[in-house]
Length: 77
Image 1 (tube, rainbow, N blue to C red):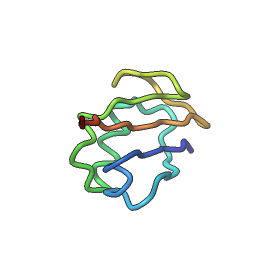
Image 2: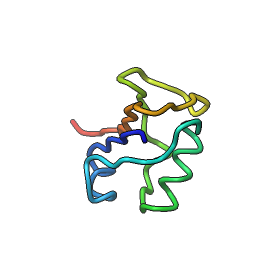
Image 3: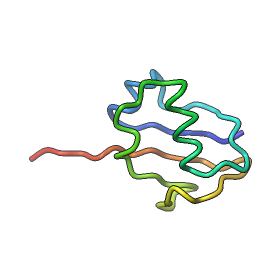
Image 4: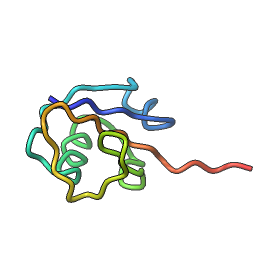
């Protein structure tokens, strides 16, 4: 299992700030696809991704115990 953290509007869309997902061996891109099948996360593809507190790319492979954070873009003045 990996822990997935959602921030800002993604947290509201998911209905939780944290979920646990079976994603050992999946890439970040495959995790996104899996999450999109379970939640209405319209902004997920625009979010920055961090794995274990380091920014990551879609091809990053996940392993059990990882913490993946999705951080949507923020605008404001």
